[in-house]
Image 1 (tube, rainbow, N blue to C red):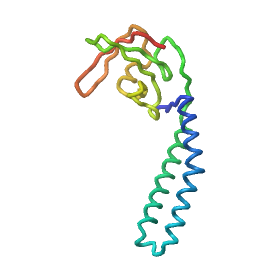
Image 2: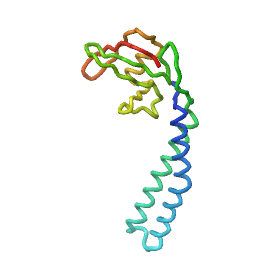
Image 3: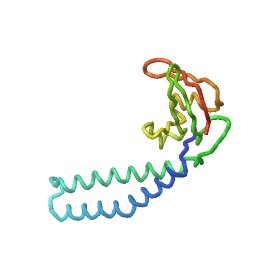
Image 4: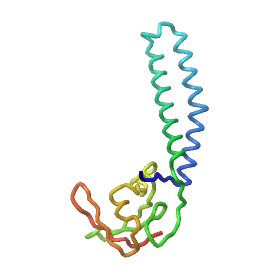
Length: 153
């Protein structure tokens, strides 16, 4: 089974969210359930049903965060000669002048809009273990795309 990775920054964000969910949000939902119960007949009580649904979603998110924190390996952003989780690679798509910068992260924090791609994404997988100057290929919906690794930060 492939390892899951998160950055120290993501770990902090998840711990903060978990604390908020377990304290503030749980309390708010329990209060809304109690209020809804006070309205009477639970079988036709939309407020009660909504509060119970919110509670289920909250508990699912808490379990999800706890799982991520339990199974993920924390990696620091670092400089290396090869692309690995935590590295930032500057790449140039074949036939294009401008370069793009991607930080390789675990799937839990991939966000292409912020330049963070998963080590399990097609491009992330292709770049893993490669060095500056290497050319990598990955499958995209439009076909195979080649990238040259310009720099590893």
